Image (tube, rainbow, N blue to C red; front, side):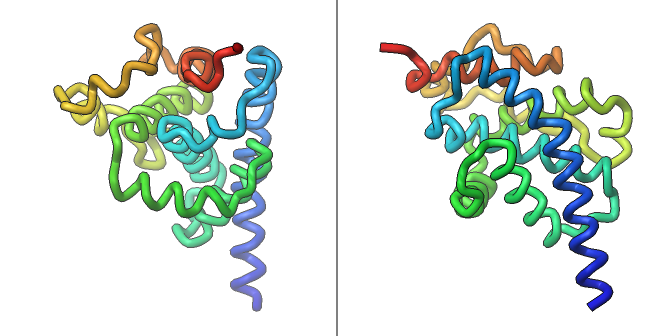
Length: 178
């Protein structure tokens, strides 16, 4: 019983850190973009981006957070930040994590760069090294032609939230106004 209580306290601490760090940025973007369509949250780039950013912020707050508890942090923070049903995230995240589509990897890389800017050197201290995924992103890929909606002006290397989040959402076909 005590172990469960400690684990739940760690989950709450990680979730709170993610929601208080990422939530205001998403709300600012939501206002700047006149809303974020619900369907956007299922986009592989945004799933990779949000899950990675939530994970990094939670791990910085609580480096001892167990992997099975991290999934609770991810789903609870996801629901609180996006306003979406967190149950939908689990299957989507599992599928994308196994398939590693290019957009998902790009979202994860962008999140690492944003986290580095938000959290500083603490990102390296938890073992997230953005340069580990750059080779995959830079390899020529047959699916690269399918990534045409990824804005050419998107620069994850800057670690700028607006570049990594707002610019991407604004470039989605579903975000275009009729």
